Length: 336
Ligand code: CUA
Image (tube, rainbow, N blue to C red; front, side, top):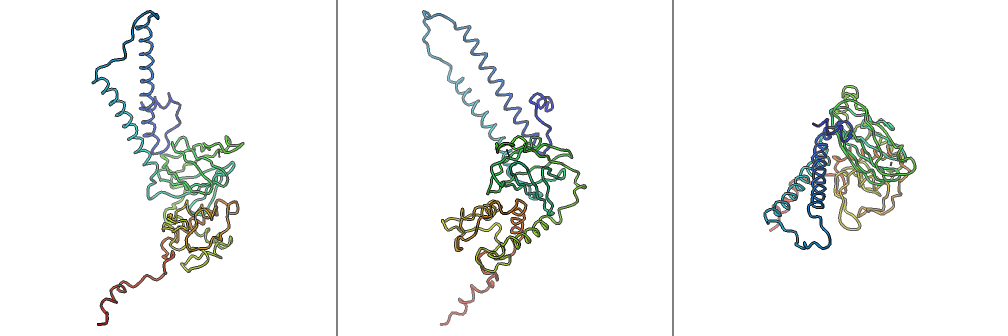
């Protein structure tokens, strides 16, 4: 049944763990739509024939149907659409929630090529290498204009936006090679902005689980030194011109404009590319933009560096935690 529908609709192989269920919803919706359209067309043709007449024929009765029939039509349609929505919403949530054990790979789109930076510090162009049977999360940004990362065989697609980081996850079911397309018009060679996902048996990729993010963070450490980040930012929580990297990841950053933002990959990338967009309260707005000055891999490495420092305490709080008893001390020793 699945194969029949897939062939009829000309869909590519179902190569990811979510592809089959997405296709099933697609089959149900398109079958319903086709049956509905056929029914409406048949009713029109029937009525054209059955109620034909000339101008002289008196037939000004309005439409009439028993109440229960109207109720059934309205309720049935509503129920049907809600069911579509419910299934679609659950699938959407699945697509939006990467498993906790996903491997992070950074993706950079630029006119007109895809580049990839892996947790072990290696990079590749055009070809994305991932293990079969392991969830992979892509953290994506663009160096120039909006692109869209699209792997038809995985049924996943996500815009890739300059100055922001968007993400997408998938788990490839078996080894093979699958097309990557750009699904957002991005200039003259948009149609040639192609790549491929090469899914290999997990054994061939080496076991990266243990040292995940270790080496990309080390690259970030080097980049931070070379590019002058460390002239203003510290990695150990010491206060300096800019916010320290220690404990920054995942923390709530108060903004000069009021409100706050969580320091995640998207915020950090934006702060590198467009530092004036969201100014951290308590720091002078002196950071230059690194848009076009940091390569995509360097950006990814810096984000990874900051992420690796998330447990280093710091932030803007003093480094040493207050002694646990300190709050109670004054009350016990209040002079009489
Ligand atoms: Cu990149 Cu279209």
